[in-house]
Image 1 (cartoon, rainbow, N blue to C red):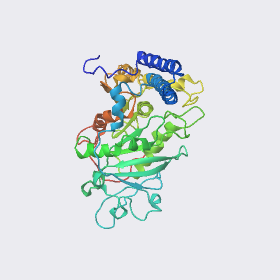
Image 2 (image 1 turned 120 degrees about the vertical axis):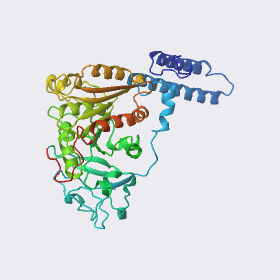
Image 3 (image 1 turned 45 degrees about the vertical axis):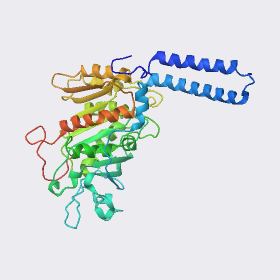
Image 4 (image 1 turned 180 degrees about the vertical axis):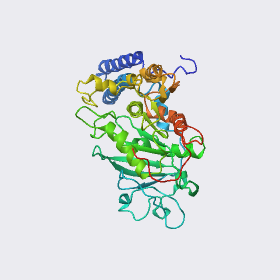
Length: 418
């Protein structure tokens, strides 16, 4: 029994636990055969023992998979995963915009004198005669607005699903000419932008953090990252394959800057992700220092991988693989001073050790914060618990501060061009 953990809360990633499950399964199979011909309640007993044996086989297989993947670290972690993330139950309005065009934006506001500006290009609203935040169209910006759209990439040609969370302050008359910092989010695999909303309710979490003052008003972007459906892009430009890095690191920021009142990149832009998205966040930040000033990686890894979900991304090009491995690119003398937040849980196996190893590679001029949760596995419950602090740290690093790294909120003239 570990200190602070009850005796029943066993480590279900342990090899001994899997062996115990296998032995118990073999025992149930043996008991089924041993009592098969007993006459008392023969039919009922046969059905029950067969079903129980099948369940034990299934549980043993799941235990073996969990021990390899570290989804749940203990029984309490497994049982509490259904509780959901601790987020405020606030109504965040969702509106749909056909697509975002990466051309310069023009101010577009209500004609009723309310002055609630929404930066969009006019072609975006060809199917909507009024701005999507208009209350008469059902969107109340009290807790922020979630824009569901797609982004057409001029460099890649991809047109992928995207959500953009606009904070309540974006619609406040006193902030009508304020530019806001931006955080891009990357998903794990399998995962989509909707995973952030459905599994972790990140739009409600953001609303709560901003309204409580724990996080400054920030635009948050969740763009799809896998141009080939069902294939993990790893957010990289593959050799003779998908150009996910170009889409996420160039096309998406350009479209967001052209359509919304964003503060300048890279000073006021950051990127965050969980699992595969954690690798994406670290890799994108190091590969695009002209786009992102800071990154947060939750349960990410730091060496480029290939497996059955990715396919052969690098075609044997070791230089390309290393160029997409933060563990190596962090040593590049041309790399701008890095600022990163690294989160992992003790129950995730190698993740905590890899985060600490990566942190050791940071230069004295860099900023790195490592947060290791005392419990939890490689799952949404663990990430949901770690997200608030990660958001606070990242938003603080890219915040617009008078007299600080970032310039004062400035009047809208023309969106930044890259």
